[in-house]
Image 1 (tube, rainbow, N blue to C red):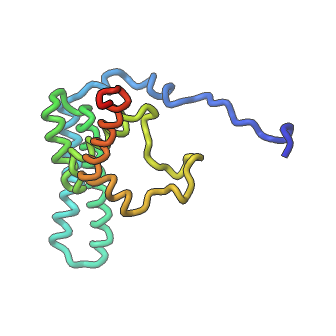
Image 2 (image 1 turned 30 degrees about the vertical axis):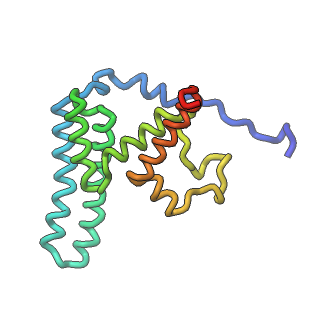
Image 3 (image 1 turned 30 degrees about the horizontal axis):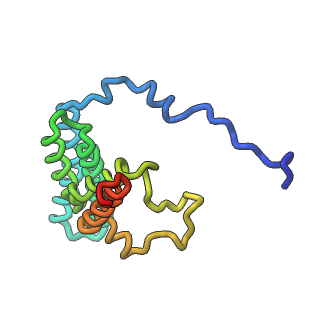
Length: 177
């Protein structure tokens, strides 16, 4: 392929920032009423299939209700994620409690998730250091194994990784040496 026949990448005309610029500022303000409606809605969408699962023994109902319950769990986790970021309510403590409650059905420990988020967003200059299959610098050989991934995402793994990062930062700052 010569340089003349190579296609150049398209110039991007619309970006995420263009979309963000048209979203009203009020959408970014925490609202107790919107948070309450969202939590009630997600809870009903989770609890209704779970309760129905308790009252049925029909195989076809199970095929319908299990995915619906899973979607409800996912919805609650998203709300827990937003609350952990402090996006749903004005109170830090209320957001933290809401995050813990909403992450419960997905068996996520909010504190461990919060450590992981802080590790990604705050402790790394590039923002993300996790493996991703779309990155050019990663190969199939560099993908985390199942055990490695489970350890990294566990509460113990998060505590160890955070301790290593703190020590690394102290060494870089000259505090330990």
